[in-house]
Image (tube, rainbow over all chains, first blue to last red; front, side, top):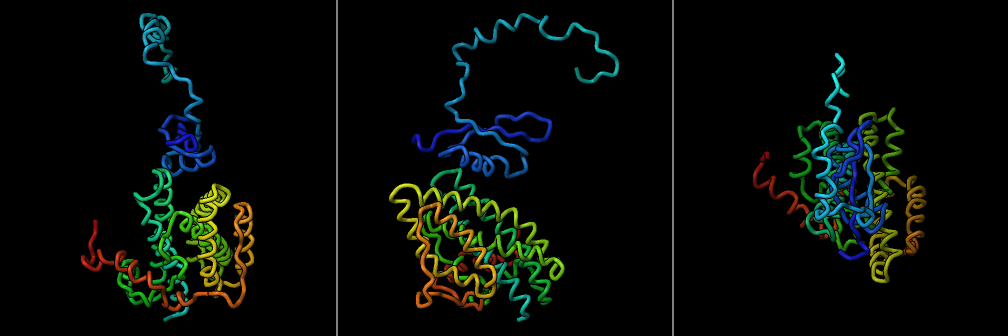
Amino acid sequence: MTDSNPLWEVFVRPRRGLSHGHVGSLHAPDAEMALRNARDLYTRREEGVSIWVVPATEITASSPQEKDAFFDPAADKIYRHPTFYEMPEGAEHI
Amino acid sequence: MNEDVGYLLGLADDALIASHRLSEWSSQAHDLEEDIALSNIALDLLGQARMLLTLAGEREGAGRDEDALAYLRDEREFRNVQLVELPRGDFAVTVVRMLFFSAYQAELYLRLEAESGERPDLAAIAAKSLKEVAYHLDHATRWTVRLGDGTAESHRRAQRAVDELWPYTHELFETEGDLRGAWLARVERVLAEATLTRPADDADRFRPTGGRSGVHTEHMGYLLAEMQHLHRSHPGAVW
């Protein structure tokens, strides 16, 4: 694909109250067309109530090479997880 | 044939044949995104055709259901305007025809929806279809502007499509003459934004007609042969 038809990342909110989640990508010449293409490609079976499209080039991603430096240090810090508390009775989600 | 049944078949056949022409783009469009968009629109129109054919069959009272009406009528019994049966052409022809046809459907369904006192079941179909048609019109509008105001080649093809299809739009208003003013307002605005020239309406120019009384172009027979052959080869087939 040429630059006149760049790649867009698509995020769909499945229901009110939920966050937009990444569902895939598509090609479109501009944001308006990207939004409409997203509607046709990703919400044709009632998957969503709201759509975001973002130019793929605008996304800064962590690289696989940095994976260890980024994520491994968190692995042995179990005290960051809220697992040392007594769950109050009746609280289902904390 | 009952006048009301004939009218309903006109609406139904417009949607059915327009749907079939759009479905010819499946796997043929210039990219996956547009391929699915055109197929979605074809499916919307097919849904409208099914509701309208079912209603026409009930009104007729001869025991014909949607399948019998879609697949077992011959060319002269189809009431669609010739505009929708013309070959799909290039992408510009498809887009411009969608603009002309969905602008017409938008005006027609708005009026039918407002006439719910007289024809409640038809008004319900119109109300349901209006949201779909609004999207078809939006899609066609954006592409018409994009092609018309695009490159020299896309402009040339879009203008050629407008010039070729314009004579066929007169037939839309033979029975719905009061809608043409509103239709023109919609279409002229889009053509102007697309830097396309709106053809003149000289009375002595080519004005094909006859679809509503079963007279069709040479393309209609081929279309029906393809659309109907499965049902006729395997009557009552289900999947």
